[in-house]
Length: 268
Image 1 (cartoon, rainbow, N blue to C red):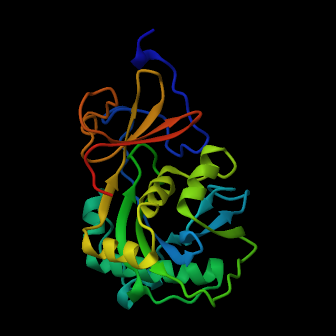
Image 2 (tube, rainbow, N blue to C red):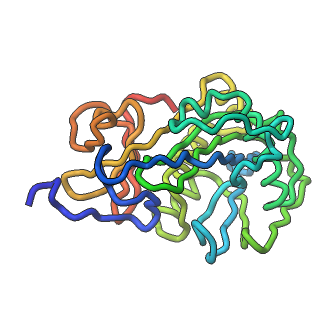
């Protein structure tokens, strides 16, 4: 059996739909839903810590650990005007200043609703934008921001959508995910990897402010071993949706026994 004929081995935190090449099946015409999240940071005893929330097991992405955030409401837009429908591709969505302003407002609103924290959206540093592959009708195109949170603020979770919270170092969160003790999806995994590259909040926020936001429009592939792969711009197999293409790597291999980040081109 060749690699391409091998059945897919899907990690339980792989959120993407069935693998299909562009042009296969019915085309997806529904635009992605605008959403926003904010990575809240503080300096802990051993370095950067981030606030993570665990979703109610009975809702979408139930039981997953996430950063505060959610979909953008009409009232989040400046003047309450959403404007034109969002573009199908994440790069166009992310470059829309009107929608980015709404994303800041939504992230601040959701932070208060989910964690009881008051934050100023003008303090948020936009550092990435994520759009899933166009293989399922319902998907979210999401702005990721980062901000420092004063330690004196108390976390108050809503008990409805959110059932638990913790301040945790990015490295510890990744280790717990590898041990299958906590669950989160690839955008959260890559974000934690990015956070772990700096030792203080000041250093991390200064870095984010000094470089353009990273735009991830995810493509999906499969290795010769049958592992599903999230591919991003710069990966040799990105345009062809083919994880077997030799060359530069910018991907997460979602093997059943754990995620593996491969990157030879993107600076983090």
